[in-house]
Length: 219
Image 1 (cartoon, rainbow, N blue to C red):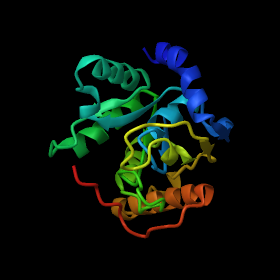
Image 2: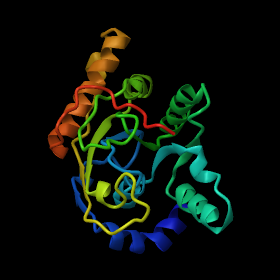
Image 3: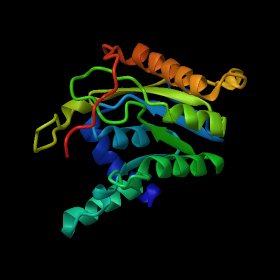
Image 4: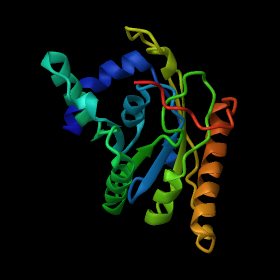
């Protein structure tokens, strides 16, 4: 399904996004790896797998997979084919389940994509990262490749009903390893990991820093 979607939808997505890709060589081609990206648009989860040289899985809201009719079927095909994993965000156990799914994927040597900000930025600022990323790093030992995406916010701005082509840029940074934090208290280590990754993302994206967590938008 993943290969079929890339073959069928890849040319159309390239035409729509016209991606410029920097640092693709920084992504390890084997073994577990975490791709931690800023988050400006839903389309980030389509662009990153499109330009990544290996299969990468992101978590996605379960409602993306539950639509009806032709559009619902097409959405399921695209979301499943690009490696997205459905998670019910209204389930009180969703956060824990998300981490379990990510750790299972990393344990099998896969690549997992995550947005430390939690939800997309609606004002262009880079928000404080959540420590779930730090938990994944400490539990899996996987390196983190920081990712900076820009331009996707113009494809379908907040409140817009239609999508439009836009020039997109994706930069993959040098992998970051945190084995030196093994003796650090877990809570402190998780915070240090996330802060260092967010600093790397901010250095590539050039976004102003919000300094606070990004509130979840109303349903």
